[in-house]
Image (cartoon, rainbow, N blue to C red):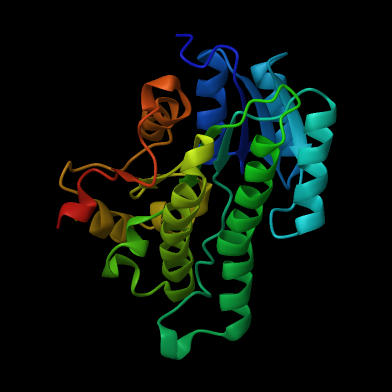
Length: 255
């Protein structure tokens, strides 16, 4: 399991959930991993779990100075990433709503973190990949999307769904813009994946049964279900994949 040997990967939102699972898998595959998270304690715990192959970067993806400083610090330390997973995001259960009922501040907070934060992560990832001291350019950038950005599944979550649709479009645009510099940009689209992000659903038996009942494979996803496609896209196995959406959703988007 050394498909990422010699690579350095940065994963945002890696203190918990999908981000943590991906970071741990990347390390097992031979990569050095940067645990990027706003929660310093969660990032430190993840680093302690992974060991010497990991280091923490505490940053707020919605703050450009924070993102720029994190990349500059990594470059100075010899940890410039070959792979960036823009995974951090929020879903504001109990506040996000159908459009007529949606408060502007909920919209702004969701877009600021999910879409603007992803944009800033991608912006500075591309800059870093274009300015390597060894003269090489190129790398793999992976964004985390959602089925709600592809269909009407998330009609009760207007801000979240719109932010994820924007992420899907951002990935395609950046992929086309930098393909000639060997920077690949793809989107992984997890379905209902049980992490702390969706506790409002997973802790409600009726709500959970309703959503799992719409998954053709008949079960909820777990962070481990997402690791494999992330490794593929981060590795040289995915060298001809760019601008694509890879659904890992138990078949939700087939319906």
